[in-house]
Image (cartoon, rainbow, N blue to C red; front, side, top):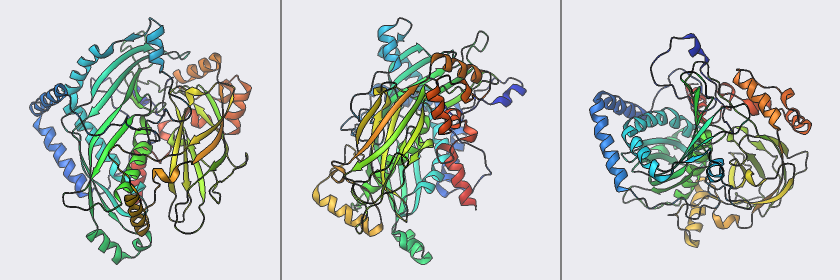
Length: 550
């Protein structure tokens, strides 16, 4: 299916055509705002970027040669996102009763001559092309990260941190390697598109570090204590041995019978990409027991606030032709009922837990239940029934997150996942979703470290489950997927191609239209970047900057 939230830059129609590269749009909700004061780290990074730009093509050529050499040497890391990835924050689409179904690309290539599997041999020249472009890609990506991530970290930092800042972020000289390439036509009625998918793995030599100051929430309100904590308890945490792998889809949509032949480009992850990394402390530092809480926070932050903004149906959108429209095609609607959860651990040392759930296909559209008391909460149909638009069923994943309500902020207990490709249209599936916590390959757990971590965590107010805490924890849900007909999809795409916003009247299936109107899903189905959720992507950075300015 086609994908996303953003709109074409329609103002281009009023301007003379330029022979410059198309502008890549930010994720949903991005807006411009007045410049805000920058931290010392951001200022230093800006200075380095300006110096690098002044070096010009000669320096870029030297960096490109380093990238080519790195690719030929096939770099390795000590981390492996495929090792025990059950319940990872991302890449967990095999959880929930079966393996992920093959993508449309695999089906077309195997059974239809219209698809072309270019394979690994053809992928090698793309890897070489990527290496030659790497100096420019890495510089652009680093610039965007420094513009977005510092404010997002500050806005989303755990309650037990007084500060959390990006200290270093460099992508290094090693580019991702393309392992396989597939090309195939789209199948959406009324949407003329062509897909190209790339399997990639990135074992880079990134230089990433964070600075943070842990302190109990109750002490942060005392100015003098906060200043002492910020001065005496500053941490520098390195993020090393990063391995990142997944599948990217480039969609050329719509295809046209006139130059430039392609209206726009959409780029997205096909499935949740897999990520593994190792956290380190400076030489001579003692493991404090808080490192695993930092790891848990980073895993969910990267998954929910960064990568999810570019996971189908969301994507980057780059218009090529003037007035090109960003097409978002729904496949149907899924009704979700949360019934109960069992064996839910409490997160506080005293008193009973107050568990509640959040469920989502896209983080921008989370559904939240009311909190309940005890370890085996139950919800009525009136309390916990929702409907969600489905755009790319074979690839979309339902996330079920259990949390504990707290006056200082909610703490995640764990989460589980279910791939919608396993659903049968029109049939209600009754499911128990296992709840787990992310684990990294290098993370070793024993009774001593578990006890120490919990004690240290209790002192500063850091909370988080260990894998042993959620053994037997599960959520009971019911899912019913109802699909749109070919005629409905054709009518919806026709309106979008003409620059309009579809209405519920175009949906010919009465049961689907009833759900759309009952749960007011039209905005969620076709929402654009200028009206997206302010809590994700670049919009989060803009919102955080606005709060800091106040």
